[in-house]
Length: 101
Image (cartoon, rainbow, N blue to C red):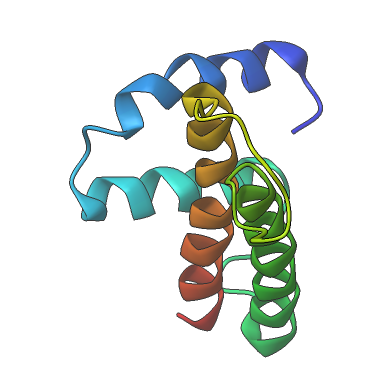
């Protein structure tokens, strides 16, 4: 999906996704993957790629948390940044399951 209007429409509904049952979340993500031009299920290769993406995104999420014992952190955490980073690995993990069928 390269049309900016289509992308905007999918983003418009993203705030509602958090309140969806898992069945609806998976159905939405499958439609989104197909709209982007991906074959779903895509098999082991696609599942592996999305799992690798999820791992990278999980490290980005970790970097939003005060996890290093040798570093001083202020006591506040950027909850908006944490919430934003949380979504990415979740989406890629859903994609893993979609690609293995």
